[in-house]
Length: 317
Ligand SMILES: Nc1nc2c(c(=O)[nH]1)N[C@H]1C(S)=C(S)[C@@H](COP(=O)(O)O)O[C@H]1N2
Ligand SMILES: [Mo]
View 1 (cartoon, rainbow, N blue to C red):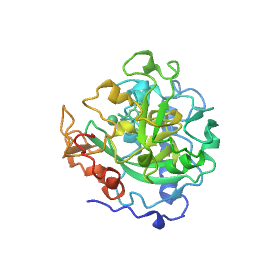
View 2: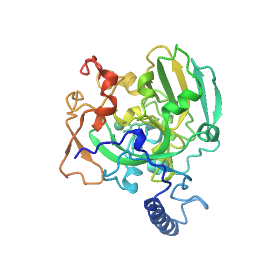
View 3: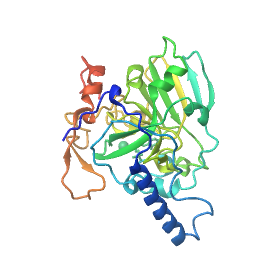
View 4: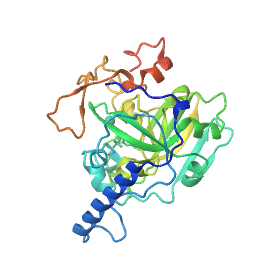
């Protein structure tokens, strides 16, 4: 079933729902139980669950979608800075330090500069948006992200007419990100969007999920979420946002250009060279459960198809 997303005018201003309180209580109980059982290996004072985020505005995005369990969203991850296995990030990002954190705003903007995480977020209202999330490896989730629209952040720094693309960069610190001790990918992990894609209201800078701060494995403290594109566009642990004139290089495209293009729009009609993109396995339903048909633009065609009108999407994959 395809759930229509209400337009921005329908976004409610209601604050945190009882669901959050319920979810957080449940996490807290689980975290406490885990801390009790694992008390000897968890460092003292290090909670297994994230900090609850205050003042989240509910939105209509994704109302009615069945959400992937917190435990699955935070234990089955791609984050090569913490290892290449799906459970490596959850294991290796436990103590990832994200305070202090700064983001460098660079390139074709009137107001460049290095901004503290808090100052980057503070002028904005945190929103919860439930988005479908689709990895090119043909698995999917539904995640209640907490974040701020990328467009609102971009506007604050006043891009100039030379800003045709936005490039994003992940932290490089092999001590804190042990996966970077090996040259599996070119570090830093880099990604990019065309300016109009970045300004689309769906593009989100996420700082949390399930009402809590992002866990390390999901890209703490700030990551991109571009729900109509394959997961690898949604770059984690961002330290630089750069406005540029030319299409910027992207990590997976540099690694294997025939497999990963710049656009990476979810497209059931264009196969990855090694497997089909027509279906997806829903995380949390078990490996052998029935696969689900993949939707064009991951179900967000109404919002984003016009960005690509006239483009041959088999060529610009
Ligand atoms: N810096 C960085 N960002 C990254 C990745 C990565 O390895 N490094 N993996 C990408 C891929 S392939 C996917 S599918 C998503 C996974 O996000 P999740 O673990 O929060 O579900 O993160 C993306 N962002
Ligand atoms: Mo992915």
